[in-house]
Image 1 (spheres, helix red, strand yellow):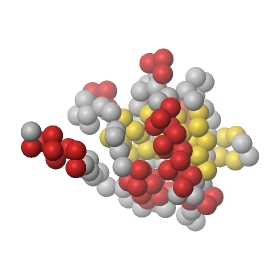
Image 2: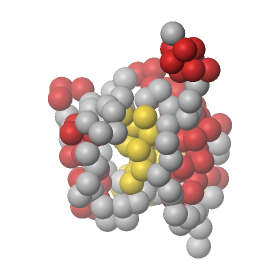
Image 3: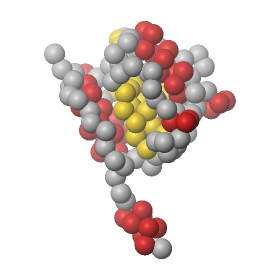
Image 4: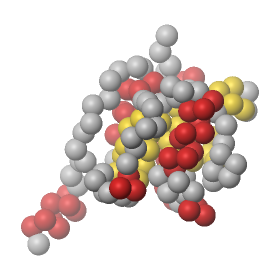
Length: 148
């Protein structure tokens, strides 16, 4: 059985208010039910509010130096196969961005990320489709920076 956006609750763990609001609005517009955990202390549960979260969107670095990897590990203690989209401003090659050992399914989106890609990647994971690694999408502003 696949999970559709109409019946999926997605836990959002992000301390940057504007990003959290953007993620929540994006997910709600796509038919998901976002539940925002303002921080990871204590790490939010996948259980609660009448059911389980089917997925999570987690910022890699949260307030008070909390490591998003710790959040993912705690979530996976409760539900080992919960799909997680990790959003980060770290370069994928940076040691701080290393997501190895977190289990899966886990995908990374580089900040700033495309909202449509967030929904697409999340939907793919919830539908049980393989989520191939993709290079970051180039934005028009990126091309102008490269030309300079």
